[in-house]
Length: 102
Image 1 (cartoon, rainbow, N blue to C red):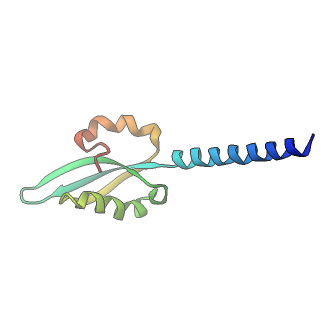
Image 2 (image 1 turned 180 degrees about the horizontal axis):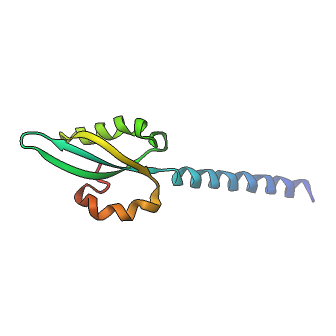
Image 3 (image 1 turned 45 degrees about the vertical axis):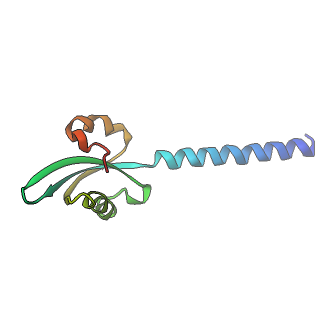
């Protein structure tokens, strides 16, 4: 192999590695389903939100979700579960208008 071919192969390896890293980071997103309320009058809702990779635990997701829904006056009651994209469709009908709203 010539020196130029080795440089080309090395460059291709770097590009391939970068593409795999970006794809893995995109796949790392998670979701949470939660219950929230508003007072006066009392209203409840069930919703599903997409979370950044850094918030894929209930403890880490709590402030993220509260901040998002709090902007519309909702108070987070509890986070039911954290899950991946494979369970997203089964939650859609239950969440209704609060499916990925926040």
